[in-house]
Image (tube, rainbow, N blue to C red; front, side, top):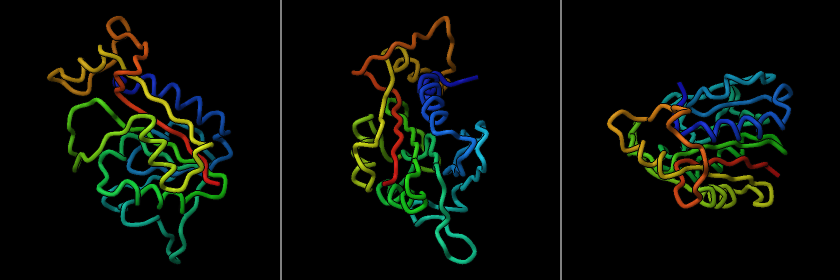
Length: 186
């Protein structure tokens, strides 16, 4: 079962990541497992509280920053106390030319796990990434949502499960439910 909130984001993001040639990438994921579905050359997960991306980049046993071709963060950045610092730490963990993909909710209920701190639109994500040091010209940001999805997010059972017969996937730019972006390290 797929959450209605993620259907369009996942389809669009799979295309973005596929274009990178994922089979040649060493990938890492921050507190998630969405990337496990891709046949990356290597795939590593860093989970909270074992690693807090706000506190610093991931280091190896010698104290050297671990580096990757792609770092993924799916539905994590809204939970971070220090998302700007975390994004700067991600840049340190990317090899030159490496990519950071991030997806976040916009219009969804408060969901503390362990906390719920922020929301971004596509423009907001682009601003976050640019302020952290990514070249704005390389940032591809998008958002999706519509009034039906927004209303479904108010239902008692959350998140809403996508029902093809019930849930239109047309985008209403004035009603974002989620946003995502892919940025490239210079």
